[in-house]
Image (cartoon, rainbow, N blue to C red; front, side, top):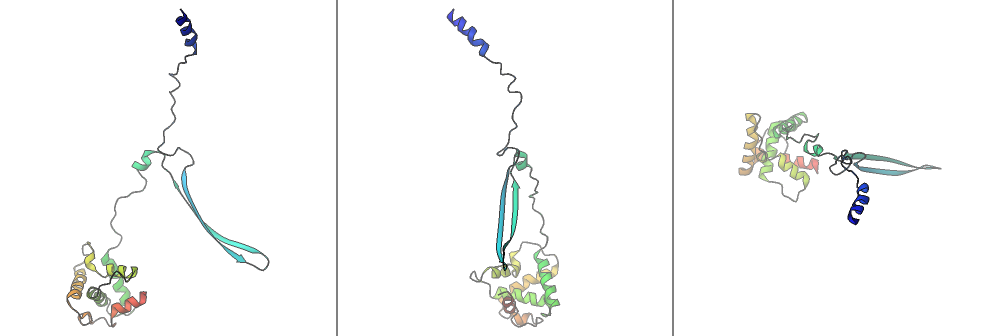
Length: 191
């Protein structure tokens, strides 16, 4: 009997919670909806002294990145990461160098470029010469590319490299280039 009385007294206090879970809070990945971003502000200021006043002139740069709130932001990004074809190739760079040399009277542009490739193969840059030498080594070594030649005349650059590896007189091989020690002159410009 006492158990029945206790059950009767407790039963009105038991709530029906079946309707309490019908509305659920929206789930978020890591960061909830709203103001969620990573922000970086960089600024620099310079004091400017005037006769009676002092002014600080400055500039700031502000950048922010919105954080993901949904897994679709990660699975389907708005940025396309598909690899695209390069906008220019080694052969385009060689063409630009050749045209530059023709324009500024270095001699025959193609001959001077081939002489530079030959001289770079004859006396390769070492790792102590720095970043510019590394860049010049990559540019002046056609065998470092896996790109297909655009024109059959581009094979002449590969031949100039091979001649530099086997021959010791690039100036005689490419005599149309009027500049003496062409690669040496070129490196003096950049150093």
